[in-house]
Amino acid sequence: MSVDLEGLFQVIAPLVTGAALEDEAVGTAYRQLMSRLMTFDYVVVFAYRGKERPIDLYSTFNARDHVLFVSLYQAGPYLLDPFYHAASQGKPGVWRMRELAPDRFFSSEYYRTYYVQTGLAEEVGFFVPVDEQITVVLSLMRREATGTFSTAEFALLKKVEPLVSALVRHHWAGLGRRFDAALAKTGRSKRKATHPPADGVWQHLNLTDREASIVELVLQGHSSESIGLRLGISTGTVKVHRRNVYRKLGISSQTQLLSLYLRNLGQ
Image 1: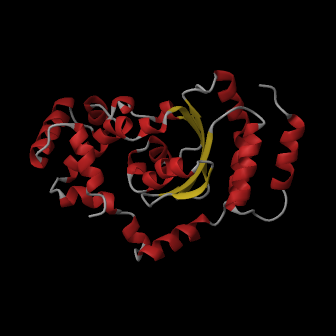
Image 2: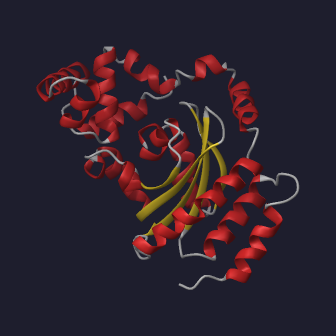
């Protein structure tokens, strides 16, 4: 695909001067900018702050897909998403999903139950920290029929990353106030937001902190070996904890574990 330089410059011009634009205008300009460079099927832009419900800044989904990619995602599955975890770490740059995913992500129950429904071949994201707490992630998605991003396309995304970062920081400043306003609507304080309903799932189910840490990592798609390395314990110890958790919860599979987790998010 050849680059439409004239069209590219026409899109950029109104973005680099003047006051910050509204979400829809910024998102549309970003989509137009990227469409001059390559083909993709969807755009979605989320802002993340800690464990709080992410803010949907812009997306191109139809009503049916919006429920899956945005509404359902915001209800809790985002807590298991590799993009969410990278954003929480303030990890800047351009990343493919498969670069950030745990070693067993693509065989995890989260992937099989939720992510596979998206029908995506690949997701690539620009990660832009806008302050020490908030990261904006601008995702480009391709469905199976479109295929993955080529090496050359990904290299081009890396080249345009400084421009995308500058646009985000100019037009999406002040997101902290929007997170605070969203918390105010729920009647929760910022302090309480660091412990969202998801954290209470494991307390409600009577798991220890160590057991809760392990099952969170299991649901994210980490193998027992990966969990052991992250927590500084042996693989055998991880497996013992997993067996104890399953016994406590009266379950025998990761499918049941995920179902229990999602069902208890709001308690």
